[in-house]
Image (cartoon, rainbow, N blue to C red; front, side):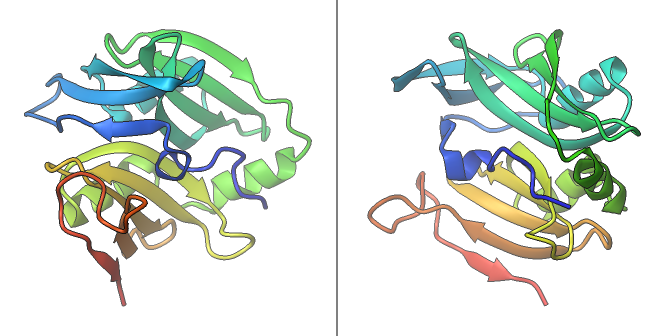
Length: 207
């Protein structure tokens, strides 16, 4: 097995800052500042009416398989969800979903030479993306901005979920992909060592 090719959003800083979190039920607007891959010096605020799990559901209607990664990115001046799906044949697809209207906007096949590894990683997870996100949000309330299934360099498979809390602070929550239990949670810090946003730093590891 191998770790997925794209690092988590929190570590890449693709999401530059979270301006507001989920305001209510399905369809509530979430304002997120997203770094545009085409312009490293700029960020923009995008009103997202599609959350992470809704984007994954939309992608699965296009490509049947197991969702292994979802993250919010900037693309051509707008916010989009990038959803990685591994089919039963081990083929990985990247599906793009518009974060504003929830519509499918593109799909490509990853030319990866490790299909067996991708397939094994997808099959190793007994807990799906939706369950992992729910577990993470139960631990750290807020808005999920990315989730990725990773084998931790041949260790136990786990979901890594990035969550932005009400103060704009980013957290990474680790959920065991077999048991569904939260095994760790920590807060992202800025260069000065303070939590991103106005939240209080919190590094936790579950027993």
